[in-house]
Length: 262
Image 1 (cartoon, rainbow, N blue to C red):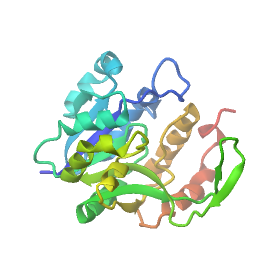
Image 2: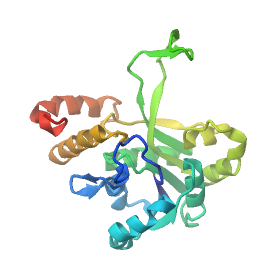
Image 3: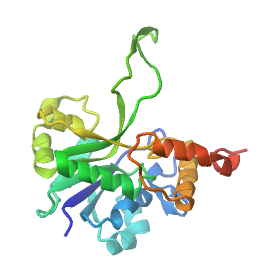
Image 4: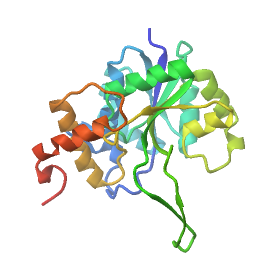
């Protein structure tokens, strides 16, 4: 029996997606909804005991109409999320089964996650108590004032861009959420809450291919990535740039129309 519960955060508003007819997580991506693609590497993972999908209450009718049968077949626990992401995760935590000792939180808008990434971050969480996927910052970072004039260049050494899943010992995460009001309003992810308790979170090399969809252009890029992954399966090497190098080596096989409209 698995030790991991997965919370899929799917209650966002998609304000920047630019489609008034539907949210990004319900858009079709290579024949399946984005949120279902985001779940793929967890569905057959032997250590996953429970999957909780937290949707926006206003999406309930649409979700039930389109996906009720799929959710039932996959044995998903579908709940209503809250007004903010932290409210959504807090509600989902209340539904985690007692047998689950670890909780993974993943963005429903990250549909290109692989099972190798999941296994790596699960293993690190088991060893260290808390782990997240992240990629090293490669661009120069500039800090500005409110007038957008630069004030300094921030050294990028040891800086990472956080991704999901982020995985935690259940007791650490529950304690962090019990004290989240003390963390203030500028909390941007779950590791920040756990760090506030004094727990360190280990970085597991992620991939630029594990992108989070924001715009409709991202949807086209995700489709190209999924085609690359299905045609050229690879084992994760552990090097933070391995997946990126593999992507660029394969890009000549893609047509320009795979990424952008002509």
